[in-house]
Length: 286
Ligand code: PAF
Image (cartoon, rainbow, N blue to C red; front, side, top):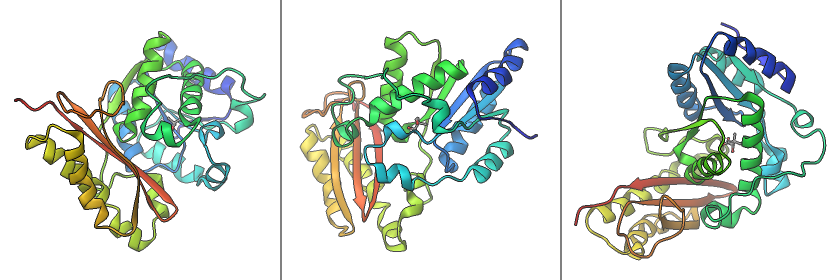
């Protein structure tokens, strides 16, 4: 079935109004396009759970901390529309930047605390841009449920907090990270890796697994878990570590002692490509 392709706020609202009149639950998968298997997992989950499934495709200029990254971001709308339609999407909202930001934005959503560490520390303004555009999308689409990947764990936490603090009537549904057979988390950035970098990239997941294994085997200090991960990463000359942290999953703040569940999160560079990944480690009985 062809999806309804809406380019304006008025068009997407009109398209969704029909579904709402019929009492359908509206699910939204917000994306920046260049869709891959990770997005497909979000869309499939939304399709199973919602009578009306909408995907937004919008490369959001205000979440890029480097202008050149925004300008280089791959736009593949025909391929993205084809994938969305093959997965049964009802409505695709693909606005131009001028539609989302007809005037310079002067209202922003700032989620304090949760954005102090990890990517928030290295990408100033990034989460402010993400939270602001997601808030706008929620106002435009008014979904009952919205689906986000756990690969971007800090983004997910930021959005959950925004929704809670601003009493937004939307349920946030986390979806597990999709991985290639060698463990590399799927990401639109993987396409930018050279063949050598792609061969080295699974070391990121292997490093997180090594840290998680250390925790499962009784490591109680973050330093010990991090050392296990760094040993894997340091064996890969192609990889430069931006951060590697053991954090409290609720606050995203680094911990020194491991006394409950933690998330191990890392960002690394392979050449000019930045990859992130994380693993949740449940509390280990003492
Ligand atoms: O994860 C993404 O693709 C983006 O950050 C999002 C949530 C669509 C906001 O632009």
